[in-house]
Image (cartoon, rainbow, N blue to C red; front, side):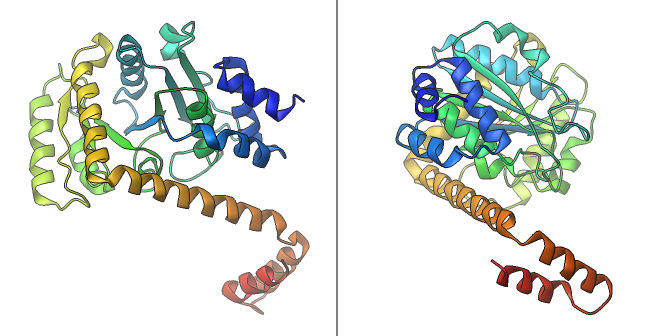
Length: 309
């Protein structure tokens, strides 16, 4: 196993193999993660994190690939974390390193990594926040986080992203689904992809109408962009919308607030994981038997389990 400091130094120099090895250590929960995090910390906080989410079939991977091309053309280093469903057997990402992003595979200015959700509700791997730190420190100007899908339990992307892009497609009932899932409130940019299909204009109108009915948590008015990502059409409008939102985040102070909330969530997740690891598994099993027998309620059992720490 390589020395953490050597790995971090190589990652800071932009060596993709070292970046990959660090993310692998993050995913596996390696014992030297605290040391790695401490070495990375002074070099983080510069990357713009853009989350992309949407129903299966709307073209998230194709849009992500097109965005990578546009960002690279602007001279930016780009990281992509594609969070895939987990294999129920291996726990690994089913889709592997994104086959639809093959155009960028040989570009040293692009780092693409698939991560498994490992059953985590919310569509994001538990290790994603720490993987973001690795890519940030490694010099990525923009990190795109593409999630499994979107639904009522899959909007955690907003807790990680500076800018959340929600993709929809005409003819899929996405306007109604967006309202149902609550993503109207989390989207900073809407993208109606496959806009060459019938119904695209109606989907745009539906979105704007529903936004006019609701109240957002902030003063930002999400733009609605139309794209045909497979042909690269409209992608420059999406990049401009993301840049506009970044400028608003800086001028309004919301950007700093989001990053503080992100750090709070990461601290809480790490603390809870530490508690879980330290719990006496034998005692928990004993309390579980008593709960099943009706001798103890789950809340009392949880309190007693915590008392074993």
